[in-house]
Length: 328
Image (cartoon, rainbow, N blue to C red; front, side, top):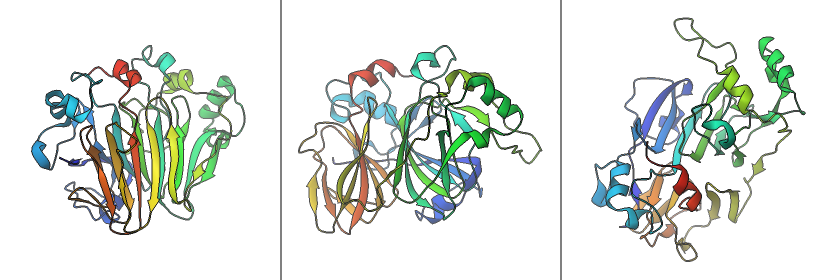
C-alpha cells in the first residue's frame, strides 16, 4: 500500500462556478453551474470520504481508520477519534460572504467548533483579491454600526491575490474571498462559520442568507491589522507555508526526474496535494488537483514525471488534535 485516493464530494454554493470541472478536467455529476466546493478528504457525520483504490476501495474514511488505526495514523492515534483535517477546493466564481470562525476560547460557548485554515491560491484572475483582517484597529461597536450601514467592506483589509499566494486564516480572523480565485483550503476538521455580511445577495426566491451577527461579534479579533500574504510563485525547492499546532504545510517545487522519499525524516501520516505537473507515488499516478492520503506505514516514494508543484500537509497526528476531535 502506498497512498489512498478518495471520491470528491461536490457542494453547490451561490458563489460557485464551473472551474472545478474545467480546470481539473473532472467529471462532476452535479447538475449545476454553481459548484463552489469539492470536499476531497473529510471525516464528518454529514460527509464521509469514500476510498477509490487499494484494499479500502468503497470504504468510508472513518471505517478505514477505525479498523486500521495503527497502519493509517500511527501508534499514538485512537481509533474512535475522527480524522483531524478537512481538505477542500473552492471555486470562487463570485465573492464569498464576509465571515469568521470562532476561536477556541469561545467556540464551545457558542456551540460551535474552532477552525483555523490555510488558503493556497492555485489560480486567480487579474482583479482577484482576498479580504483578511482590518485596515486599522477597529472597535466592536464601530464595526457593528458599519454593518448596519452596509459599509463594513471599507473597514476590511483587501489584498490582490495571485497564483502561488498562501495565507493562514486563524480562528477569529475576519475574512472573505473575492470572485476569480481557485483556492485549496486545508483546515481543522470543523464546519462552523459565522456569516457577518453577504453583500446584499439574495437567492432565486429573493431571500437573503442567514447572518450570524452576535456570534461573529463575539468571535472577531478586532486588532488583526493589515496581515500579508506569502507569495510563493517563484519559489524552488521546499518552502514552509504554515506551521501551527493543528498542522504543517510545505510546498515542493521540483524538477522532472527527481525522486524523493517523504518519509526519510518524517514518521507521520501525511496528505499530498498536486497543484501542477505530474507525479507518481509508488505505482500510483496522481492527477492535478488530487489529494491523496499517505498512511503512517507507507514509504511514500515520489517520482516527478514533469516539473511539478505539490503541497504536503503533515504533523496533524499529535496530542493536541487527539484531545480535541472525539468522533461526532
